[in-house]
Length: 158
Image (cartoon, rainbow, N blue to C red; front, top):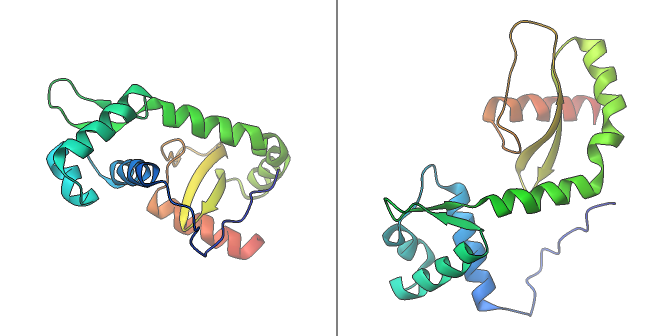
């Protein structure tokens, strides 16, 4: 199934609470560590009570997790579950595997299947090199050096 291109023109429809919830998730995703309410409030430009209610609902749905010791928030595993189902529904791994195997055999290097989405590279699958030095990005995350290699391969073979 092909990805439906997103329109670059803003939608006339707004659901403020969804915009706020998605903004909170984006802040957590881009943060190098867990975030406190005090850090989320200015980033979202919202009052502390509003952010607290928003985070409570996100926590109930397992989209965020609150550390009981520090009170700080991080992304929840429900997002991983949803993302995994989205990727699995595309059957990219199965369709790409013969090509990945062929590239690995031809070059003798680790080969990655990546998705480029709005400037971010997401690693979906890899076929390991048989060589002793290997590169291992975190699953479903991007890594700067590998992004450069993936983009070079895309320019060369894409």
